[in-house]
Length: 616
Image (cartoon, rainbow, N blue to C red; front, side):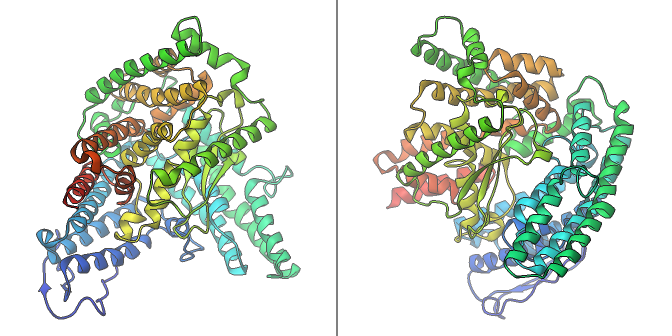
């Protein structure tokens, strides 16, 4: 893809100062003439470049509430990834040639650092293309694309409907691109575990089952299509004749473009399945596997911590949290060991809703009630609150998995589409009640919904930071920090709910041990499951789903606890240095006020806030 030549600025960039340079390939870079401060000029440049970067991803454009490239799906080919890397390299060379870091404000220096970080991320990812698992059970792209189309593509008129149909066919192209990459990586010796193959086959088969693919009940995408057409008819936007034409276009897109691509995925994964290992192995077993895992740890934690250091941190946290769990066990009067208490919570019916659709509805209602309570407390702890509403929803049937982890999908910056907390509720015996409250806070407020919404709604920083990519150590660290913060806000009045909070913190501490155990120390799946069950009351079905998640997402599970610990350390530092001047709302607004950032940049933000608070 060609890189657009940067437009000259009309008001800010006048013939005052001119700087020229060459990029890393020796080609001349664009010259920027700036009549204002370096910071004003750079911020304008960042926003121009953000618009260029967005052109690579129609999906991101839709996620941000835009209707540009509304009929397109992203290009998932290796060639497209390389084009983005080259764009990042050229843009960074342009920045370095035209702006002076030392002349920037502190905030602009953070933006510079973040731009460099994004470029480095893109380059590092390409280095390990051959080690990546392309399709797997953890919200893999094969399932994420239909979910995206159903939940984020708004249909308000006939052109939106035509774009929706075009995207139905475009999914087929994307799936073929992903299959090519999966096949290439398999040829290089990189295959996800057999259970991931089984999930991809199952989910892909479900997506192309039912009407219009066969005589069964309507598929999720066909139901979505019919719902959109019905609404357009009710609004008088289209005629019955036009609705029939659009319906047939959708049928063609689904049956002739999308379905064949998914069938190719099913066929190849079924054929290649015997080549997978019966016993899952960590990524260290891959070619360059150790280097790949170290890269993943750095990517997910944004630190230089080694696998051994993370493993030892996990062991220490597990020991600490066990002591707090024992204290609650004693408080509720349970006579027996902690392991027996785990079994009691894991097995007793009082800790579960009924295992049916009514139980699923009860779960969602309880989550909504907890979130309604915490909303009343937010102004005491935050100066800035999100504009976007929050909804709790059950995961769509075609991607729902027993015991799979809940997750959050952001809304739009203008609040027109809500943020959504999704829960897998196909097996209510894998969804115990004690952790329900804390998970609602993690995924909703004051967790991911607040963190993501505030970032998207920021106006004082460049858009590439406010609406840019997600950094796990920051986002998941905040999510876990918010679980404990909710206790300060008056949540967990029931001791079993507070035990649920400790259960989820233990869960994240165990992740440090298990993730590094799998990918650095050669742990088997059963070894990881056994360690998890020995230190947590989480039901075995959910534990196994969790462990299988770690196999296909190496390092990701370490982001939570490492990020939380760093945020806690920065808060303790601010409280100590500021004393009576410390304001919890100011601290939280500072942490969330710069968008998703690596932990080193977060430390700079907090240090700057401390210094400014001391001055005033």
